Image (cartoon, rainbow, N blue to C red):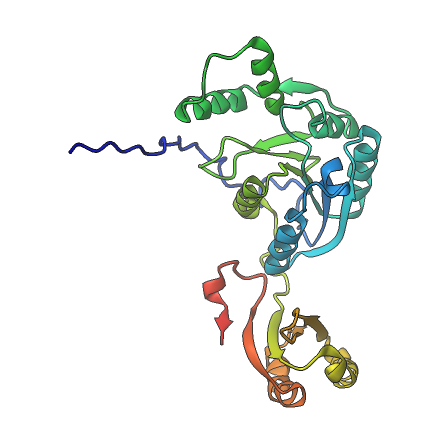
Length: 302
């Protein structure tokens, strides 16, 4: 008996934006690097509870692993004046800003328009993005029998600010680019799958100081409740302050607590591990250096 099989269409592979030479072209200016960051989540659906935001959490981990200090996460509505104010304020205060949401084919997707206004630009179609979009739709075998209004709606996703903006294609698998405004503000979609892929691809396009401090972290897990170990953590925090070691505790629902120690001096951290394990009746579960690599295989897991 003959059998038929179907397979998913083979999607196109796109050319990435060439990697920058920050010694020659730095979006922040010569000799400047990203050390602080902010996250701007845009969307009524997040504020009214219809959509659960995971992008800010993903960005927080991304920044933590690269040694970037994420100092602010804001959630705002799809309102032009609010977006304009937040975009200007955050880019003034921080080295790097990542926005999520509000880009798409529908009328409430006003992020590009609002960002253009925030930085004194107008909107223009990016023909390379239009081309890539069409190539992607063709490869996906999407019905090409569409109305002019549908085409116009789709092309809204290629309508970008025409000044103080650069279009970056950080991955070969997506036609969707990242638009970076004023050298600082990266506009990303709200769909988590796209947000995560584009953010991961952006790592090489962020000017990071190769000589920046790269702290170490150890995690010690205990089954004891946080209230039981709190007196010891108070003493430990005071003890660690002179050496610049940060102490944190993170309860796991019905599964004990992770005690975190972060510092620049590995020798000092290593000395503390036996003491903390003993006092909290715990076990070292992870240790490694941050800001050096985002590959989890490069960190030491116990």
